[in-house]
Length: 317
Image 1 (spheres, helix red, strand yellow):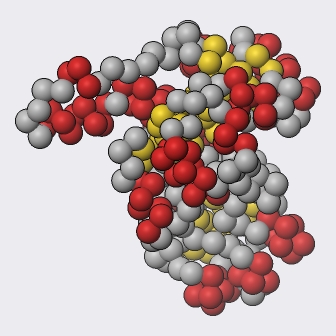
Image 2: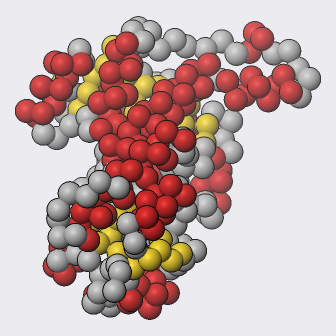
């Protein structure tokens, strides 16, 4: 019997083609909630998700045939990794496939914030010539704090240095931080608090865990210099959302850009208030949405998934 794969969220068509070319049976579900997935997944060897579907401990425990959970992207906050480990279920993802796409969107959001590009476009479309209103800032010479020097954060820091920004970076592993900061030409911050105090713009590139929940909160967001900017393309729950809204309203922050949201799509009134704030640029979680990233996801995730279904032996997709 060939291995059966249940794809729960939209994935690139090439990924499905690669699996079927290797003889796998591929079925689809429409981002099922855990109570539905718990029943659907029982007959499958692998589950493939993006960010919408949650693979809970209950789903894993109810799926005796399950061997692999594959995440077509970077973060694993929607997969109970500990429950998978207890059951001997492998969890694979492809952060390297989406890193550059997310890094480039991060830069695009920074530049859009600093130059008020969306607002200028809308103003002109409305028939106004508000040239004098849109006096912006330049990245060159600006002190930018990069929180996290992983796949995405490192690329963002490198691109910022190339654009002439003064980069200050922070990650918990001090040895890795100092090594990477020296290679990039960035300053290694001694603490998150130091980074916040010194940065005119902060960008977040860390995974969401219990430890990083509300890492940026009502207490430490006030450490930022008045008139700073915040960009979040990692996970919304890393930032205390209402504290971010208050920082914008009080003038602590000049602006913010977010590609990630507490609920996707947003459903609470305060979430929409943040999204519609005149000094906020919000996008619908499009960080990995490039053709190139889709191609890399297809090749790398198919290769990793096939390897695990073959007992850990490398398989070229």
